[in-house]
Image: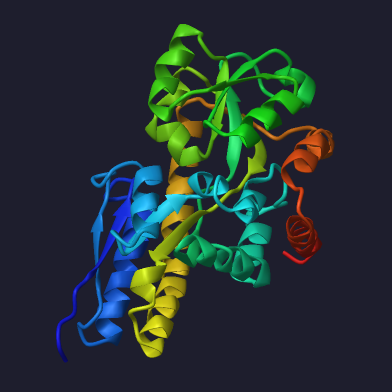
Amino acid sequence: MQKGRAFLCADAHPEEYPTVQAVKEMGRLLDERTGGRLGIKIYAGGQLGSERDTLEITAFGGLDMNRVNLAPLNAIEPMTVIPSLPFLFRSTAHMRAALDGAPGNELLASLNRHGLVGLCFYDSGERCFYNTKRPIRTPADMTGMKIRVQNSDLYVAMIKALGADATPMSLGEVYQSLVQGVIDGAENNWPSYESGRHFEAAPYYSLTGHVMAPEILVMSLSRWNRLSEEDQQTVRQAARDSVPFMRELWDRRVDGSRTRLLAAGVEANEVDDKNQFIDLMRPVWDRFVVTQDQKRLVAEIEAMGGEA
């Protein structure tokens, strides 16, 4: 069978990261299922630029595929805000069930009008708060704390609703800012807390699990439209089949980070009552969930919470 041109894909994460490995697995499946006619060449570690830049290039057809965080998509597609809502997902199982089901399919389809084809979601972990001062057991424990967040209006609103002061900054500045007392804490998953060495300065890790926003793999719509219907189905199925592969790598990475950090003396704690945090999120949801389609989809996802 004739050898085809490999799809060019960008990823900001480093080579060994689970999303990069999952896209490579997808490429292997494509190669295997098409006799070498389709494949993927991935440029990891941000070689092709920031996620915001590469996303724009992908939408214009200059790049075939792209693995990005949801945040850059929030500005162009309101539906993509939904998986980032604080305390929407009650557990990892709830998040996975929603994204593997009808709500996830609707979110992926919402990107078509922006020149993108949503292929699948990858895990980005449960984000929790960590700080230099004390365990966070109730929202009152956060009062007045300076908490680093991503440059996102949604995250800023969440921190303010919890009574803390939001400080947007790049991830690379967090360690030094914790050491120097510029900020009191931040929020992220176990692997990022470890890899950034933030635990050295902020040893209190509180298991809020407040955000479980996924990452997403997209394809250029113009490139997609040049594929036969059969090849489109093959690409979509290979993407879906790469998801359990990614999740296995991710779960292993989370378990390893948690084990090493607890052994290193990190103090992890459950919160007293998660509903105390959830109740404070209503104004945040009201601000960012405004369309009828958004409200309907949120209700559908919430209804799945008892099933997962």
